[in-house]
Length: 456
Image (tube, rainbow, N blue to C red; front, side, top):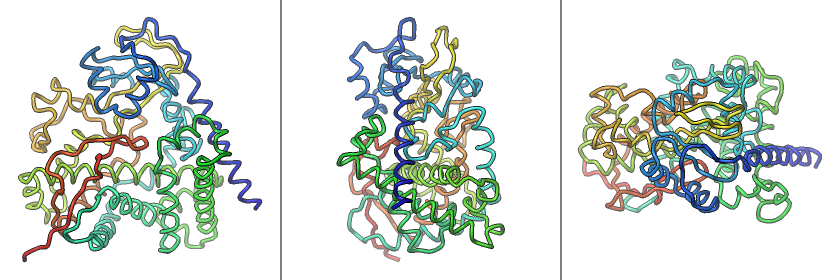
């Protein structure tokens, strides 16, 4: 009971921290800031939180490359479409452009010691500590295991019956993270941890209310969510304790073992591991779902990918990965909260405002990508490089996603393994729409596919 009480205090502390940061700038005046809609705050908030993939391009087309939105919690927001303005933000002083505060709503899950929620000067040493597990050579050694797990997953799929590929992608990428990155090789413990992480990371809109109003954590249904956080903490701390006692820890290459070599504080390790497990598996699963949603609706692209399956590093496979993330980005915004006033695009932006490079909008800007900007055409990546900061699915600057290379290796290897293992076809003829799920933009129908029987 004592340990459960301690875990509850930790979860509540994270909730209180998130709430105080999220409400910090709500009263900032927008006078003199870039133009934006005059709709009520509630209307803007709903449009932004539930349909930003349509709302932000619409606002840019109406008001230009720099737009002010009044959104709660955490607003006002200044959203950016021009790559030059985005470059200024990515290259801005970390002490002024706080990405950690911009991610404050993630504190209840990933904690206050996460590279996602830390700011200068604490962020730099934390990021440096997290880098060794993601060296290119180390990631390359995991590729075969990724392919094997993908084939094992594909063999469990029903034949000739529709299923939601996204849900299976969540399970597969979580298994890869738990076993390869976290290093849990006991299948029972891995499954238990996986189930707990799915509940914590599968955030419903109602769950977010407890992030803003922590006092709701004492009543149902939010009390259940807080208990899920507590349970997940217990499982992770148990793995940390088990690994600290492991005499072979120094010879292991998984992220948890490497982190424990340099970090004596279990709470810090917990936050770092949670960041990898939750952020890493969820975004990669959604990327896979969008890739197959696009790939299977373009037979010519699929045929060309199949032609290169015997190539360990087929450039066209990489082009498909990049193009899928361009036309269907998983994350539509990254945020930086200003700690002091700045000049940007001729406007004076006050401290406390958040500036948000508009990933989805810049990815389909015809000025950057041509008249076919919204078309899924992987060949464009073999014809030349895009303008700088015109392709930013992993953010940029010193806050660029640590796991970008890992995600690319994982997606490309899983894609190749699945195409070798099974023949797939779409269930619905038209393009799938998109919907917000937590911080990611997912296929609205979950990428509905079916496995078809092979005739050979």
